[in-house]
Image 1 (spheres, rainbow, N blue to C red):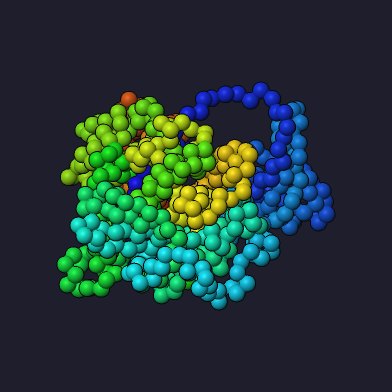
Image 2: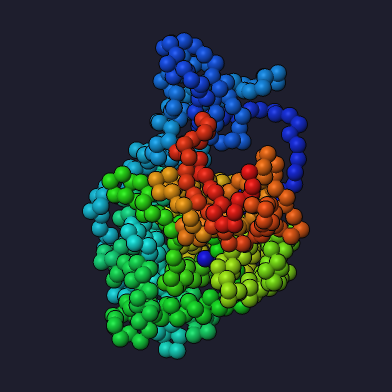
Length: 631
């Protein structure tokens, strides 16, 4: 993975400074999801008896809320929504009222509703006005010949897409053919804006949603499925409208020419990553001599050069644990979980998406310096790297953070033949030193402060995923206007357009972050479900962080992170040496010391819920090796 990785919220760097709340001018309406706290006998209380009951939000940052209700017998054991009404300064807890029930606590569907509601993710059907913007023919829509006549017709070109198995929302496709000593590379992106008119009800709803949200077991689309899975999806063997970046690239990876065209394409094959990888591995074409296979091999070769050039410029190759679940078909319960394995085909596609995004960003920043919607990734302050540098030094590796180039080079050099996984741990730790990248309107940042630190790019945007990101829809509209294909939308040429785009950027940043959080929470929920049904008595783990009362662990076989609580006899916290980043205890009379990145072995299970906040259960981890503290 490249440095577009977004660190977990609680690990993200920040330029914010601490402060204190000295008064509340206006209280925003707030609803919370959670459960009522009950005691033995509460469930059989007399129906209709009014009681003041503590409500426990699932978000533990919030206090309990006292709710007066007659429905405790019915609502005990349910996930419910409560609205906060008031908080008297003399009261320990705020008061609120019951809004609605979501379902049984611990049920996967219910807990998914909770996490989506907490993060304000749109889950409802699209409004009739929005659906009314779709082609009346529905799935039978055929591109009018008059529309094709206005476009560059590339249906004779051997285009293909490369995606995960079962992918339905195919945003992008590629082609590569020789052009003398150079290569013509086509990066073809679904022409979503042909179907989504600026300012239309569908456009406004897509802007409000901001992004698609990907959960373990489903996808919540930014646009209706008629577009995402059909008319805009660049499926094989059907004519599709695209917005294409046609690049002439030299063998050394230099972009000699760039053209952006509205096109019509007909993909030859919708490949999976592993199908594309088989073509790449067939280096001499002795197994597959098709035009598509030859194109994929050329793309892979150029991508290697582009990647080397990016790295030479200081682009970072970071890492984060990526998890894939195998689901039981009938019950939809997780039956297996593991770290997602990447192949070169993944990196090949990623390289051309990055290249197209950089080329579009340069065009938009030049043509619309006050309107371009760009993406900024700031350089982390040096103090964010202090623990990474110290942890690496304990393993005899020097990490130089004076520039992204030096950081990339030192991470490349931090290889231990006896511990191959250490390099990935260092890259995970480096990822968590980064602030997340954010959208911004070009007017709001000086030209020298628009860069993308992780990609070592002076300017960057998102263009390649308009099916699932609204920022890309904006880029498509600006790009179409920049090449004279379409007029600048009225919203972009009206007075105050730059300020409106700045507000949109903030909204998209918030929506994007919430979608990422939802994805992580879905992974965490399914992880608890998996270990509840499939406890593991002994599995390898690596230490990511050391705290006085816990170890933060990564389970490489499963790609998941968990925390192990450790206390000495009598409940006292263990001795942590912050300078050496280690924790020590005594086990059976033997001194034990564990450091960051050490390998340990643990038993993992999920116990029954212990409080009203808990969902399917509580993860319980026990040390197998080394032995846990005495007591």
